[in-house]
Structure formats: structure tokens, C-alpha cells
Amino acid sequence: MSPNKLARGGRNVLLVGAVALAAAQLWRPVHANPRGNGEIVAPAKTSEILRRACYDCHSNDTRWPWYASVAPLSWLVQRDVDEGRRRLNFSSWQDYATDPETAAHKLDEIAKTVAGGDMAPWHYRLLHPGARLSDEDRVTLARWAAEEARRSAATPTS
Amino acid sequence: MTQSKILLFGWLTTAMLGHSALADNTVELRAAGGTFDPLQLVVPAGTPFKIKVTNGEKIPVEFESFELHRERVVQPGESITVNMPALAAGSYKFFDDFNDKTPQGEIVAK
Image 1 (cartoon, each protein chain N blue to C red):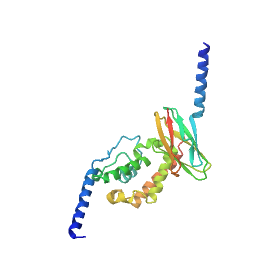
Image 2: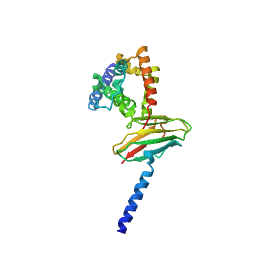
Image 3: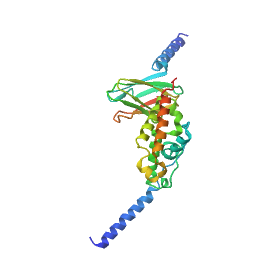
Image 4: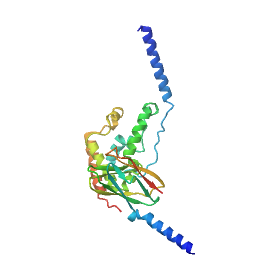
């Protein structure tokens, strides 16, 4: 293939990519922070860690980053937040607490996940260094969650 | 007059039968054979209730509903009781988060 044909082919690929990227901006997800139902109550230090490292995906107080407005990243961010809120939402803790065993189960999972180093996800930590948990943060969160899980499991149900 | 009595008797019988599935405001759900039985639970809207979930499988199941904020593990051969809030009329999905081949069920509040 001649150098001219190669250059033309490369230009075409770039052009198609640019058009596709521009067209993708037409599909914009609505980034909403709806009202919750009874935010979780935690000691100040624990609450600070939760807000810094967990709340963007696991609450309705998401801080939407600038790239959340640019497709296709906007779609990925929206998917992560939707999934995070579905699995665990600190803004709607009262909904879990009406079944104390569910709340205990959620807290138990938090303790295990944090202690095991599985949260926050690595790809999120890359762009959000503040979400990295120090060893001290992990111990604080895991102890608090385990203690609250025991307390919730011991709550009498009506 | 007789017709009124028959109608009243019929209404009372229907009402009693309708509530028999909700004795103590508890509905029963069983996980067995790779499915939930029943797959649809009908409950009255606006009234708190409970679901007794029994695991007839040989493996643990996780009764979960994102919409209802419920997540409970049931060990093989065991039963648990899940507290449910008063629901607005509508349909709410539930599933087994440990076994994704188990079909989704729904709670219908009427």
C-alpha cells in the first residue's frame, strides 16, 4: 500500500471516530441526586471516610466529575453510580433498617469488603486518589461496620 | 332480602379466603428446584407485612430486592422472616443474588 493511501485511510478512521464521538454526545444520561430516606448515622471520623471514599457511588450525594458529562465516559459513570446505589445506598439507610437483619447483612458486607481491600475499585482510585483507604481508615470502617452489624442483628423485630 | 343475604355471605366468604394467605400478615415463599414458589406474591397495598422465606435447596440462597432494599441469606433447610414496609400499589422485583439462573419473582401490592 502506498504512503498516500495509508495516510488517507488513517484520516478516514480519525474522521469516522470524531463523528462517532460527536454523535455520542447526543445521548446524555441525567445525573440526578434524588432525596434519600434516612441517611446512615456514624461517628464523625467514620462519616468523613464514608463521604470521601464511598459516597460518590453509594449515596445520593454523588459529586459528578467533569468527565461525567462527556460520552462515553458519562455512560460508564452513570452505570457505576446506578449499580452502586442499587447495591448499597447510605442515603436511604432507613429503608434497610426497617428490616434489621438486612441492615446487619449490609454492614457485615461492608466490614468484609473494606477489610479485604476490595473497595473502592482500583479504576475509581486511579482518578480519585482521595478514595484510597489507608490501613487506619480500613480498621476504622471495618470495626465500626462490624459493631453496627452486631447491634442491628440484636434489634428486636416487631 | 334473601338475595341480599346470599350476596353478603358470598362477600364474607370471599373476604375470608382472600386473607387466608396473609394470616399474621405473613406470606410464604419457598426456594426449591431452581425457582421461587410462588413467583408472584400478592399483598395488600398500604399494610406492612412479612415474608417467610424457606430454602429447600441444598445450597444457600440470597433473597434480594433492590427496589425494596432487602437482602437476606437463607441457609439450606432454614427459614427466615423478612419485615416488609407498607407498599404503594405496584410491582416489585425480587431475585436470588447467589444463583442468577433462578427466575426473578415479583411482589404485587394491590
